[in-house]
Amino acid sequence: MKLIKDIKERSNVGIIFITHDLTIAESISDMTCVFYAGQVMELGKTKELIENPIHPYTISLIKSIPTLSVNYVPKQRLSTIPGFLTEDDFSDGKCRFYSRCFRSNRDCLKNIPLVHYDTDSRYVRCIKI
Ligand code: SF4
Image (cartoon, rainbow, N blue to C red; front, side, top):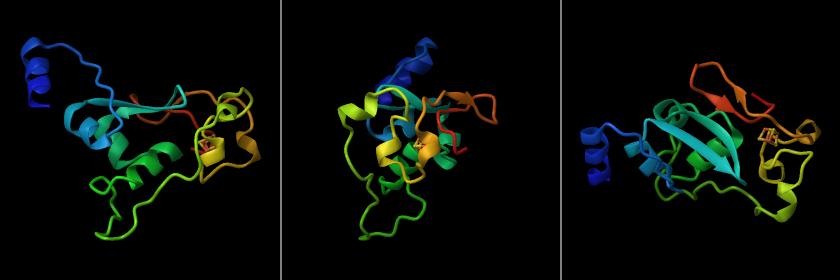
């Protein structure tokens, strides 16, 4: 991480870093893009996105990480995202996170666009925002 940060600062270049670990994203990136099933679910400044996640998938991811979860109590069971990603989740005509989302209802049974949200750098793919 230190080497990547040094290269970024010395060379003044942009770096795309792919990780499953939001704590690493928090430590290294200015902007974070959260993908699920091949689609961007949320995009924004890393600090804003982690402190105020909007998309249900981002919210669920953050709750599952002890160091990022505001409500984390040591030795308490971590939150998990129910279910699995299946081939059916990739089909058109519904949100790709539909089968695992804690906010889903029939309104989510259509293609959901990525939309600009509030601040100039935040984009979210969810109709319940
Ligand atoms: S569109 Fe519906 S299913 Fe998809 S993330 Fe939003 S609430 Fe959940």
